[in-house]
Length: 193
Image (tube, rainbow, N blue to C red; front, side, top):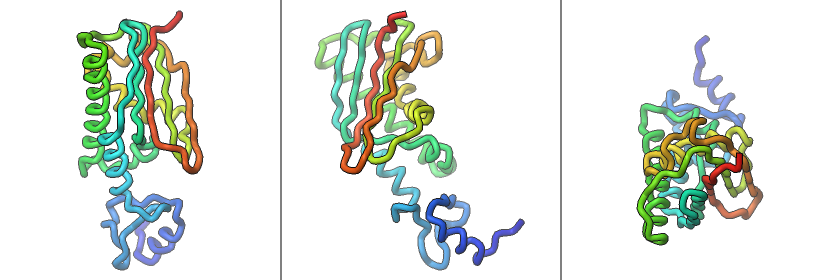
């Protein structure tokens, strides 16, 4: 099946469809935009910037609890992650921003609590928090935090992110609605099992 420009224009009238970069980003001289009037590239850039400029708040109880909140930060939804064009480097930039945010949080704990960087013990329960305008599906919320969790592994807070170290995802909390400030939070707590 061949898609001609006339058919593409008809498809683009449906604002719920996502158009990938294979179409060149332009149809009839107009840049392809999403339902919010922004190009897909600007969505990724805005999310990366929100992570990089977020204000970090931490709480730490040696060997029992590590909690960090990134005020002003948002995440890419699982659907947006799956639609990223891997050839443009956007995924690599997003992963780096998440890893750097985790490193900032761990460094802040070292400074504030005057402690050495030591990994949390095995058997952790993870709690995830997110606030923003639109909610994610709960399964997508866990997947959307993958690079942040990987960042905490790279920063030395957790030894592994597999079931031998992370026993469960106990709490998934979202506050969503118009005017809700952007933030993401993650807590690693020693499981009571």
